[in-house]
Amino acid sequence: MPTSSRVIPFHQLPPGFGRTLDTPPDASATPRPASTLVLMRNGPDGLETLLLKRSPGVGFIPGAYVFPGGRVDPEDASPSLLPRLAGLTPQEADARLGMVEGVASGDRTAAPPAAAFFVTAIRETFEETGILLGAPRAACRTIPRGAGGDIRAMLLDGRRSFLEVIDELGVDLDAGGLQFIAHWVTPEPEPRRYDTRFFAAEVPSDCPVEPDLREIEEALWLTPAEALIRNRAGVLPLVFPTLRTLEDLADFRQTREALDALRGRAVNRLLPRLVRRAGGIQITVVKPG
Image 1 (tube, helix red, strand yellow):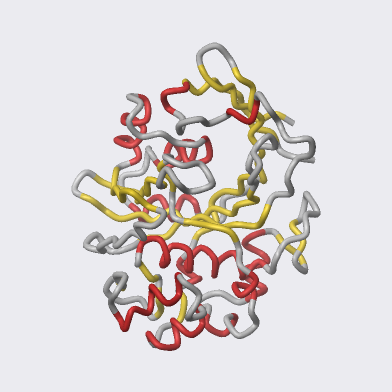
Image 2: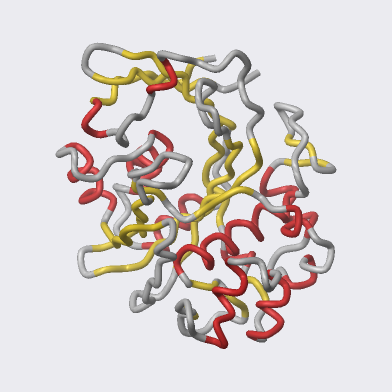
């Protein structure tokens, strides 16, 4: 059932976005479970979000500005990690994501345990930005590549597991600080598709970012309003879920205000459908049956 439809001009989209509409695959790819984390802080002009520009050489939406995130790895569902989730039990994770025994209610899509999506959000954010949402909460923990005995680099190249990293750093994961705010599925024509849970979390205003330069060209803290202005001007290309999230946050002045409003909000699984038009891509958002 459609929920909304609009045309996004080509200049507001990543380079080459929608080219698969002309040569769609014979069969639609199965979406892979993934997580995204919207990091927020209080800046001089109000609430700011962290946006990362994906490098031209990456395989998925190169050149787009995105929130940190990535696919769920099998290790993210490890029972050994469950005791390290501060402020969140597996049962609470199921309730927040609307899942029962690894199945998403409403669409019956097989998925990893709900707690794994929280782990993925924190791990991917750490890998891409150096920011670790650890518990107990304290000053911001940012681990540059090459610091901490090169522990972040060892995680990135597979020489350390995420469990080994948090053991060495002596922290648990602040899973309770994550708010589940959205659920998006990559459009069907795309060769790489993800079934992505979006979370939001607050970090201190002085929290530095150390991006992984293999995948990230630039890291920007922007108010949602400024990000939307730059997108309309064609200098900050966005995909639709990122655009919609920024629009949802644009009315909030402070991070706490936004998190309070988002807490407990009903979240529907949404699938954009794409049609090429003369001036851009028409995006119709539907709730898959």
